Amino acid sequence: MKKAFNLGLFLGLLSVTSLALQSCNEGGSKKTDSVTIGTVDSIDDIDDLNKDTVEKEIKKDTIAVKGKKSILHHEVDTAKLLTDSVSPRYIYLTFDDGPLNGSQFIDSIATAKNIKINAFLIGKHDRMSKGLHKYYERYMNNPLVDCYNHSYNHANNKFTYFYSNAESAYEDFDKNEKELNLKHKIVRLPGRNIWYFADRKRIDMQSGSSTADLLYQNGYRSMGWDCEWKKGKPSGMPVESVSFIYRQINNRLRNGTSFSKNNVVLLMHDDMFQTRKAQKMLSDLIDSLKLHPNYEFAHMRDYPKQK
Ligand SMILES: [Zn+2]
Image (cartoon, rainbow, N blue to C red; front, side, top):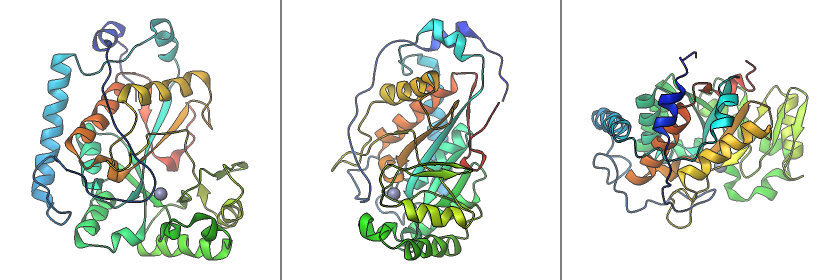
């Protein structure tokens, strides 16, 4: 992705401010007081018709934002900006626990912004309703969205118990791959930030380690994350501001503190983006990152990308 670097334009678009936010965590998918794009009262109500509407709305918003120059409000260190412009850097937006209410908007945003994103899916959710199955199909049919394995049952949220038997845990991933027809041998362990691919392994806790070993021995790559945009309780909204997450990503890249240099993986959850406000935050984050001419959105199957 080569773009002409226009520092003047770049700086012009970045001013100072911040957006206020809210909260969340792993697991539940409660509906909030959704002021959603289109009219969505139940997860079965979305169809392809208002998919188009959603994408148009997002595009409209983006144009309005750029016109006003007032939404992308982040402090920028101009000296570092020049350094930033030199080497390519890769950003992996990863969304866990789908399909859930929220997945349909993430799918629309990826399309409207024309960026690659990554979805770590749960087979049990796909089986919960026709509506959720539709969101799964949207993800699978969108070439911008790569679908990966987050286990079938999500450990039923009893993580230590789940990982106490590596073989049955492994079987759960295997079942998910088959049920969801997943094409890539890429997993994310529920409730654990564990990396294991090539000869590189990093675990956040011992429980889960033997499952990662077994997956690795069977040709899977386990992918963790560098930063997380947390989900608030009970609102389900993103906890941190757009500016905060934007800075986290930049800092990881500049300081070389991500698991792989020049690559940064952001964890989010699908159900954080049920409301219009949360969708706007995600759009704003993407717009901010897109202003960097050397930043590229990537798929986890290509991780880690070098130049
Ligand atoms: Zn999860």
